[in-house]
Length: 69
Image 1 (cartoon, one colour):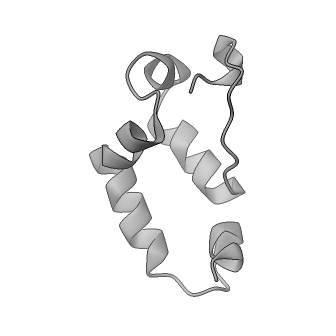
Image 2 (cartoon, helix red, strand yellow):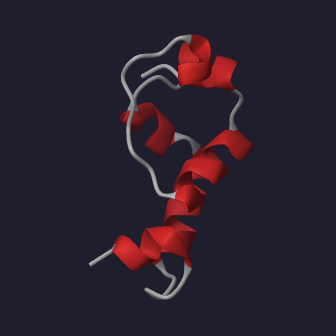
C-alpha cells in the first residue's frame, strides 16, 4: 500500500476516525517506505494503542464504532 499522494494505486477503506489518526501519526513518506502493509501499520506501537483505545468505546463513539457490529 502506498498513499495516493505518493502515486499509490491500492487503497484500503478506513473510517474517518482511523484515517485521520493514521495520517496524524505517520507522514506519507513513512507509509510509503516503511509501513506499506496493514500488518506493519497495526504492529506499530502508536496504532496498537489507538486500536486498543477505540475498541473499548461504545457504538455511539465516532464513525468507526458506529460500523462495528
